[in-house]
Image (cartoon, rainbow over all chains, first blue to last red; front, top):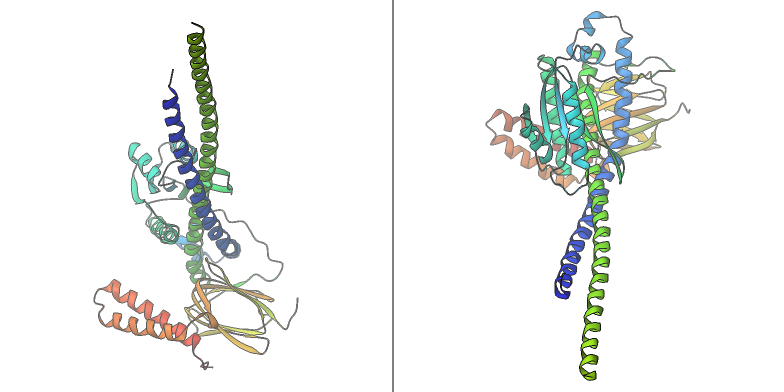
Length: 291
Length: 139
């Protein structure tokens, strides 16, 4: 049986752990707020971008000028070709201690890779955890994005969308996917697989006249669609970041509570041992006096 | 739906820069100089050049910069999606001037194609910000 001293030492150590997890929870809460603010600030932009892109694609579908329709970008959005090889952006976190955040995501990624069959697949990985995963599975990785701060995500989004657009036009890839954690709330995330490119845009109906595309439809499309893809990627990167901090906050909150439980139990045991030893001593004294 | 004013919105990935009622509006087009928009304009979508947007809010003429923009024009509203945008009063003229000087210096010492492009972009940016924040509007 553990001695009184041992248990006291253990309580101290658990208390230290509790302090650490409490601090980490607080830090995550702050980071979560930052990511969430960024997400909220981006939302009107992304929303409008989706609307405008949708109506342009819609407008082009209504045109029967075939010379326009042969442009690769138009092709990509209107007539997606058969997928033989795809590119995937996998977003996990750099650090652990965030509950099932990475485990669930990578499980989803495993399932996704299995469904691909004979399709060729290349990866961009964001976060150390996804980089490790890809290395272990010996997958074809183009770029590692490790330790990217929140402000650096824009650059990542720009690079990936740029590469994807180029690779698509060169015929190297037929689609761009993204695997990330969707942010529902601070305590609720869900790993998701989405196809970003070519993307099914929702069809927006115009009550009024169909809009003019100036200076001509292709130039308008060329200016807008890469930005659209970029915005979509950026929004999802920020969602993943918010999810990560949310998951970590929840995990750390749980461990802080658990540490509290352990301390209570240990304190109880410690008190029992102390009482037992006092009782023992009294018995010794009493029996000594009786003798 | 009023036919005498337009609702102008300028949105960037960081924030909504402007959301105002205007009576007229001009923005730089990609190829054709300036677009002038009045209420009840036919629906149009067009990419924007980097430059300055001019608009009248009430009787007051105002300006804003726009970089990497795309405009959606409807009869009663105009939405501009931009990579970056600032209104006139958000820019410090002296600061923009300093940036302009720095960009000029950078341009002189730029020898690789990349650094040249970078310097040119910074020069353009500084020039537009100066134009927008100048005390006396050029037009």
